[in-house]
Amino acid sequence: MNIMIITASPNTDGLTAACGKAAKVGVEMGSALANMISLNTLNIPSCHACESGWGTCLKEHTCQVKDDFQDLHEKMSKADGYIIITPVYWGDMSESLKSFIDRLRRCEASNGDKNSLFGKPFICVAAPGGTGNGCISTLASFERFVDHVKGVKYDFIGITRRNKEYKLVTIKNAANSMVQSLTV
Ligand SMILES: Cc1cc2nc3c(=O)[nH]c(=O)nc-3n(C[C@H](O)[C@H](O)[C@H](O)COP(=O)(O)O)c2cc1C
Image (cartoon, rainbow, N blue to C red; front, side, top):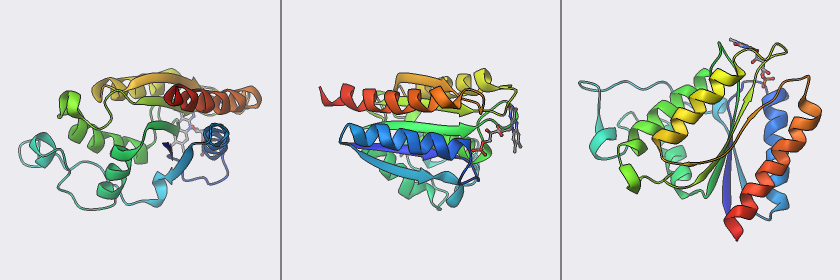
């Protein structure tokens, strides 16, 4: 079993990275493979809104803008479940994640129940600063994305540096529980 853990922060030792490590421990406790992806190391700029708004995403379910998107899209298609972790920027997911998700949902949501994410579980994590501002709005953005691709909402978790002691444990346990749910 293959679980993709996607982090979307430029910081390699910040809160997002700590969440990614906790998720990996939880996935591996369930004897699944954790496929770690750091979006900020990839070249996936924002959607071009080709032609009059839709490009090949609408009918061919692929993106015609060639960059690192294609390889990651294929990996997403083959995975069994997803853990996506973002810092909160401006009350929303980070730019690197927004760019990827915008392009991914165009390709997949346009394919209805045949989309490659259909029925697969998602754990979504928002990591704001100390105020916690924008945590809920970021999780709401995640919820719309999971709705659009008809995924299963396994969990939506907010974490800050104030509560990370127990929320990192929650992320590990959620990851492990999601793997177990796929095993039975
Ligand atoms: C451009 C930018 C915008 C931010 N906007 C918010 C925000 O709206 N709400 C918030 O609580 N923190 C905000 N932050 C703080 C980060 O969300 C917070 O420090 C986060 O935990 C950083 O994660 P990292 O350690 O993985 O980089 C912002 C940070 C940056 C760089």
